[in-house]
Image 1 (spheres, rainbow, N blue to C red):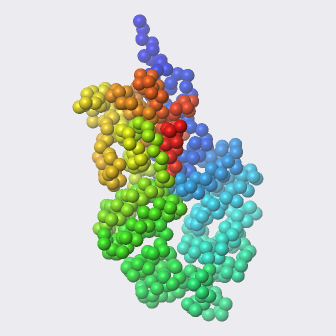
Image 2: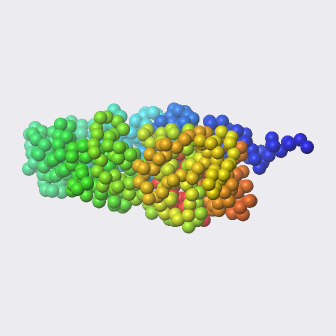
Image 3: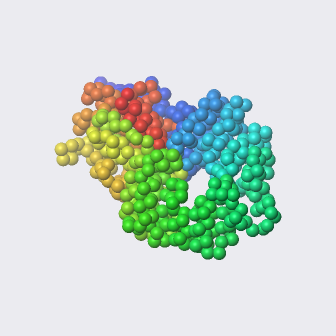
Length: 560
């Protein structure tokens, strides 16, 4: 008999060819997978961005692809795009807000009248701080300039809808970015000041310091009380003229000044940082941990360390501050190693702070619900996963995948954590009392415990061997070892090419032979157009790997 079925079968098809009868596309890796729709591409773009590109595509190529998909969504249903952008940005699903601002700018300039109106209305919800506003204006310029009545009215409302105190904080803290300043935007939009205090702020931004009595120097006695909306503006001007670090520290306390208001020459003085710390926003606190430690201010027994531990242990504050877990992971890795990823700053890390960052990573996710199911968490450790996470150039995809898997493992009781990568065509062999994949690469149970610190897990993952990508391996391993699994969760870059069969075929075989209606969740760590999950199978789902909502989405899906 001629074995024709070995060359054309719906049961086993090499990943370098499409499954007969399935609508698959050739991926950049050379393998075949399922194309995700434009709305999924939009969500991946909003969560992951394209900065740094992926292992298979440059940032330029990805941005063009994702922007084109976003534009198709805008043409199909622009208001829905705006709602999606707002929901993603407001929930803090992404480590960076730039993709949301970029997509919103597209809506204002490339959408229909209703889409543009909705986008302009949503501007303060997405551009929450001055830096966001400057980014948005620069993006909008690329899509048709900075003119138009709708554009100018939206910019005006960004300034006039805020109370004077909140606006003063924004204007002194975020003074300019991307070649734009508040002076530029106020002269462009010509907002009408709703109050006398707004009028003072507008004049200050456009013309510089002016006071009613025409004196050149601001005076502390100008304050009309501790709740004066303009106190930070006055404090900022006083700080410019301060004669000592002690004087600056007193101004920080009296006028509630942020770090950006401190003259550069005083940013190496402990007394200034001690004044800043009690009211420092949580994102600024995380960003400046190394600096404060380098000055000797943060030690295991210091009051500063106790305060930092308390702040990082406040889940409500973390979520309200939209602190993304990956930002904490990056801070943890940098802080624990005692030096930043850039520059020459170094410090002796305080163990108490390292532990606080480790705990904060889990707290940055809203409470994850356990499924009570038997799970297999498969971490792709192939060569493509060595590429940095988009927007996080010092964190690789496989390190981030381990961190995400730990979030699930911390709330579940029954699970396996496997690392997988193509093993050069070798087969399954007996290893101890279980069968493993032969060779230096393949599939292997990882000695990762949810009780380990994240920085320890990252170091462990850095030492694992890498090869090609075969996302079927966790499923085939479970079948070879007769391990009962209710759901497979794979963390990959959504490209698989090195296996003898497709993931959906391996899953079907596992279901048939084990008699378990196992589910598959494919968590993507790359902004691309592909997925290994079959969209026609209700038991398979594609999600975004760096989304703060991912752990609960997975939990809900697995738990029905």
